[in-house]
Length: 119
Image (tube, one colour):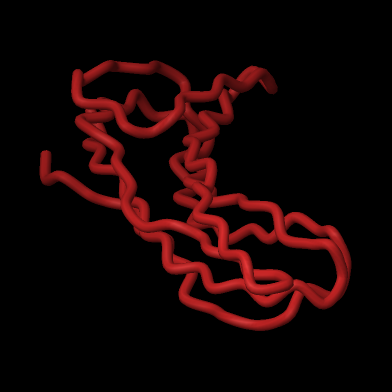
């Protein structure tokens, strides 16, 4: 079978409205198939500045594996060892990071991918 991929990215700047979580995701509906996940990885960062100080942070990247039986499992990126998972209803690749407090300028440039194959 051919390899397929999920890709999600955040490229945004602004002033935080409040202390808040910002998320983005890509979802593949797989209808209970067996999936071989080859890899997931991420790159990028989040910076915030306030009162002349700048901080450099990181975003969390994870893969949620929703199972046909209603359960789920999580994998953090990066993953560089292939795994097989039977009965996968969907895959959700998510980026999440925290901004704030209100008025804090931030810049986020984060990319993530997951390469998988249907068996």
